[in-house]
Image (cartoon, rainbow, N blue to C red; front, side, top):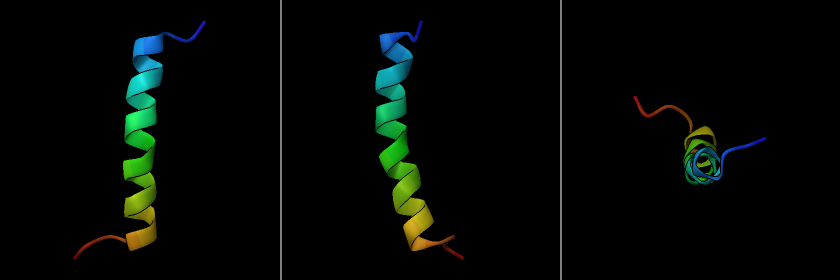
Amino acid sequence: VIRSEGFNLWKEILPSLNAVCQQGPTE
């Protein structure tokens, strides 16, 4: 069973990870 708390957090984190992946590492 997935906790809705963790799921909501995941839904907020995933888009951020996607953006970082598309941008590429900022260096």
